[in-house]
Length: 260
Image 1 (cartoon, rainbow, N blue to C red):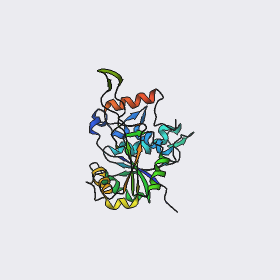
Image 2 (tube, rainbow, N blue to C red):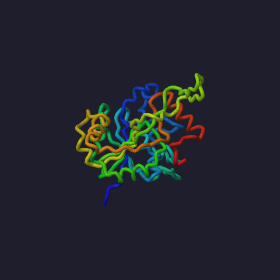
Image 3 (cartoon, helix red, strand yellow):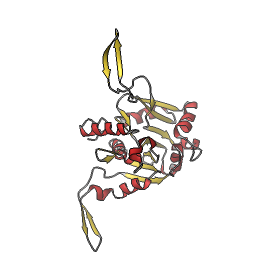
Image 4 (tube, helix red, strand yellow):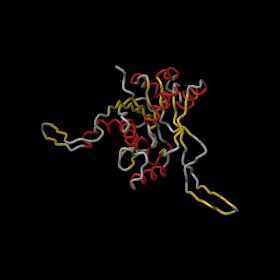
């Protein structure tokens, strides 16, 4: 029987640019609306029926491990009988059926090395993303695109949000002002990748970067296709970006929350 397609989430980095939060917890555990961004990412995949995950843990990985090991009692009503340690868990939550492999991939392992370490958990095709970015990508369309082109890998290209306000100028006057709009000219790697198993053979070890190593190799081999996503995408690299994502969630305008 074929293995279920799994989603690898790189959740072990130090997150140094978000030091206000990551001094105390790993970046994937920084919250949007009271839930870790990691949960939001997983909900996005599960919305498309992709509910088997491999989490590559590293920096403060025990916090992620504890979160999921105690998920049932955190999110359901519980009756505890003191003295006997008997416990009854009531009702249900919408994450029923998630299957999560919590893999210690080392605190200082690079992104490609983390993927190499979890190879034994993966099948012939698998998805990979980062633990700090959300998007309104239709994952069914992404997978269909990957299957159609027949290459070893697909990376999703996105337009990042600008750090600066954008001015449209006509006749010496500002005709349009947009505060930190989405950039429409440049494309960057937004994560949300799909791979065939043979790519794992190109990963050398713990020090290898996924981006400068594997993806660069695949590009040179003409085995890296690009899925261009012009919709919403936002990473959580700074405190300001954390604030933006929380405000979108609070106001009910979170484009990534297709399950809501």
